[in-house]
Length: 211
Length: 211
Image (cartoon, rainbow over all chains, first blue to last red; front, side, top):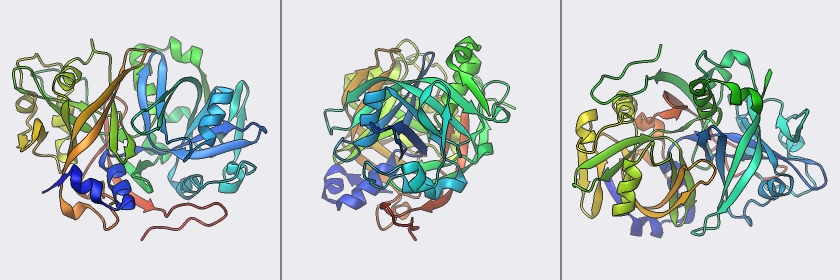
């Protein structure tokens, strides 16, 4: 097993370092974020650094890169206060990846990447019709990270669209049954297979499978 | 497709809501965080809300639940300023899950959950010997989330331990070749299968696979 020092990491080519560090923290959620531009056109872009912050209230966060690098989604969210998050399925990995391209402000990224906008009464931001699990968000707060100018965007869930069959009796969502993919690094996509669920762990007691 | 309103979510039983909302945001990274207690004993606990913040400097964040619910890891990190993050492999999913149990301060969670501590010169926090991909972190900042008292913990990578064979020529890490698992919700674990990598996307150009 190789021990890599920070000095060595800092000496790497930036593309090598970008791939390596992005992969190091493990699998992420491949998620398309839908917003509305000032000219009312829909905007769509893929994000992967999504995290759960709390269930009550239901708060989910994501990382938006520095504004110079990824300006549109965050500007739209700031202006309108709403956005949708749409989980990516295996059959649409190519389309989802294409949404990471830098489009000019006049382009409708839904059209350009082969997705269909889905509008839901009461939600200003567009959903991805092809997504089987998606939710609308209301912006809570944008926290700038002073170490590198990325932004932590926190929002609260306002609406969920989901096939009922995907939800277990106890609320667990079997994402693999919707062909939901995981993301790795900057450009990697993975299918998943259910391994197990385990009951609430207690000190000194054996782990028990949820069946 | 069912449209679930926030009102409906708020009326759910809290365990159902916890499972549902934790799953909604998608796959996460199953990661064991190793720290040192005040009495110098090692501490170990599983976390899943891990996110990439930047590659240069290499910054990775994680969510620590409110201090009453999960006090040990964050207190150790605050006191020592260092911690390790160890990716979980398929064969150790049960042990990793067991580390979520509430142990008293006198218990060595490595011992209690069947993991081996691995000490590396220059790193005060213990690694998980059984982990094939692991890294040491220096605390940068703890950002309290005012909406629900969780904490966003940001740190910078100082050391990486990894099998060299896992790293591709361009720095991509094939985590699936190390049997690294993904996490879903509070208690779900998944194996993964490589689907594809795609080259840097450009507007108006087709998506091309990385081969």
